[in-house]
Image 1 (cartoon, helix red, strand yellow):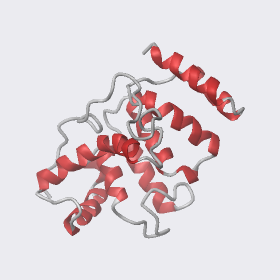
Image 2 (tube, one colour):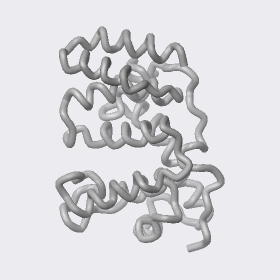
Image 3 (cartoon, one colour):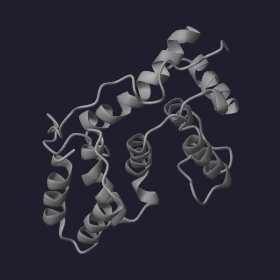
Length: 199
């Protein structure tokens, strides 16, 4: 494999929207429907795929080929050379040897998945706090069955705002989470809109 050096830190090849936008397919805030709407799903995934596609182009590898799956294994073996976005896509292309799920999906119950998850977080070199939140949010939206319903709901509501570059303070996150836990989702949505409007 050639000496891949990302031109930019992970997740910065795709410009992000300045404001929360509605999804043209499902009508919810864009990416809120990640689990069941293709447009929402793709709007988030393209941030990761842009870095992966740059690596494919550098290596002369076609997406969907057996060589791509081999590359994913190589990337996971030399994780210190790649940004979190590239590691995450590599993990989507392989199955865990221990639990048989997508690598990382079994975190925290599966040892191999836990190591892969930790490695991906450790690869956030140069990442901002907002990019870390975007990274964690994708994990939660991708594997909602691994988290409580309240956490999934809170992240589903928050991620469209995080996509714009906003990040709640600890106090704001706690206030929003309390409303979600109490089932006051309309109030939580209004609070998010007010908090995000000032960024």
